[in-house]
Length: 146
Image (cartoon, rainbow, N blue to C red; front, top):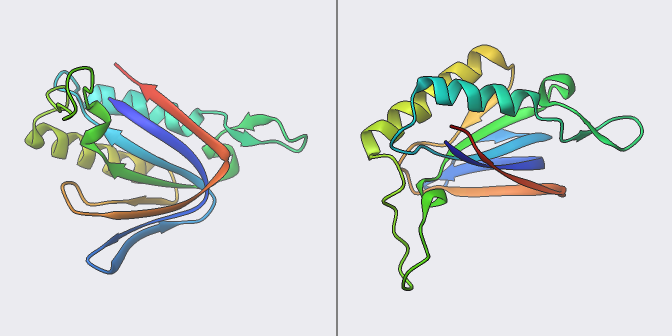
């Protein structure tokens, strides 16, 4: 799975002028499933997200995890993370999982996250979403979990 992690002061997802998810300080993650991904891959991504030490400790060092800070987690499906722009000017998305698999794995990830963390919000797979965030730092990290 591909993910783009952003440490945020706040983040939200709006669909058709209706806010569907909002978190305060924490982590907003764009998520893309790849064709070879499985529920185990999603489990590995979630474990990495919850333990990734990108939050400041009392000395201002990035040393604390989302679990330790009790921050919010906002998950947003984003198949364009798999874009191949190496040829021409129009991106190819052949590296993204087919929509059925992508939907299944994103739903699985969100449901599992809700059992493991107290504050979890999510976008809607395949929807036209407006995502707003205040990046904190800024801290933005790409992840590729296999």
